[in-house]
Amino acid sequence: MATRTVVIVGGGIAGLATAVRLIQLGIKPIVLEKRPFLGGRAFSFVDKDSGEEIDNGQHVFVGACDHFQRYIRDIGASHQIRIESRLNFPVLKHGTTSRLRAKNLPGKLANLSALLGYRHVGVLAKLRILWGLLWISLARLKFDSPHDRVSFDDWLRDHWQNDETINNFWNLIILPSLNDHITAVSAYTGIELFKVALLGSPVNPGLGIPLAGLSSLVGESARRYIESNGGEIRTGIHVESVNIESGRITGVKTSTVEMVEGEAVVSAVPAADMTHLVPVSLEGSDDFFTAAEDIRTAPIVAIHIWYDRPVMTEPFVATLDSPLQWIFNDTDLKSKRDSGQHVIISLSGAWEWQDRSKEELRQIFTEEMRKTFPQAKEAAVKKFTVVKMLEATFRVTPGSRNSRLSQRTPLPGFYLAGDWTDTGWPSTMESAVRSGNLAAEFIAEDIDTRR
Image 1: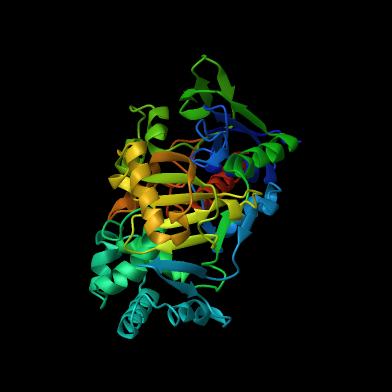
Image 2: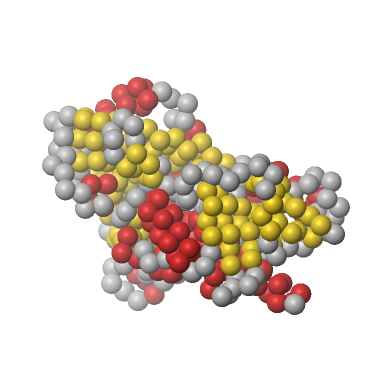
């Protein structure tokens, strides 16, 4: 039985992943979550308009997310995800569908072969893209790399890319992956993304989809694992501050003046919430923690439409030159027995849509669906709802890497987890799990050193 205890503030994926890894390292976690449910920014709920359980947004992952997939296996939820073995998805533009589909070839050739049959760029544009990928493969990224001081759009245009390649290929991948337009993300992150996604293993860009509600997948499955292995999860607990004695963390104080003690504390909350836990006058740590105040976020808007009949046949479709961006066939993905169809339109970098009313969004996107999918012209809309996540992900703008903090802090006994910390990945479920693993391993190492 574990005799060492660590307090984790936050029951999102990062906090839960920290707890799972601590258990594997022989340390007892106590997870404190202020909301009545787990999952953080990945949860499902019963929509009051439709009466159905829906996810707060369409979450996806890729084959390269090996830490996330291991986490799902560890908590016994592998049967609740589905992943493609290779790059393969349809792209719709002005009524014409073409696929980015990797062929059965070895190594990098598999992913690069997807360009051959991709009809939304011409022959010269394909040569431009290959030239850009060559320069990406040659790029050497370091901590002080100049790539983090320019946008990916500027960097690509300096390497023979133009509007055709950027709009029809590069931004098609950047916008949903980084939740921001290619003109706003740093070249460092863009290069890093394509090194992994297209210049790595053939399995890396395969798209993965949850088959169950997010609260079940990442929340309750983790709760069962943690509690059955001696850990604790307490919801509805608001943590006000860390408790410091003799310059060392000894636990946290809650809003009810309760003290929860532990040999270490992990903050697994967003950067803005983390800074409120640490005393501002704490000597020697101001410079470290204040960097996180520069973290900025980007919104995602999810449009849910229930039709009385099927309107699309693919599990998911990307679009070009359309506000639809990505459309997911939730009925198919979750194997629902329904004569109708539930589709989810996922809008990344959704500043244009975040302040629009539900009625306005309904008018715009049901009409856009009718333009894009012929079957939608004859279908009736049974239900319609909108989920807005105004701070869905952190932004990876030029210079933002300086705001991503290490999981080990200068304050003895205080650690950080969260997709925004320094994991080498953008704002994803993979980054959240990696941060939790790193925090747990630092804790185990430091506790053993002290002992």
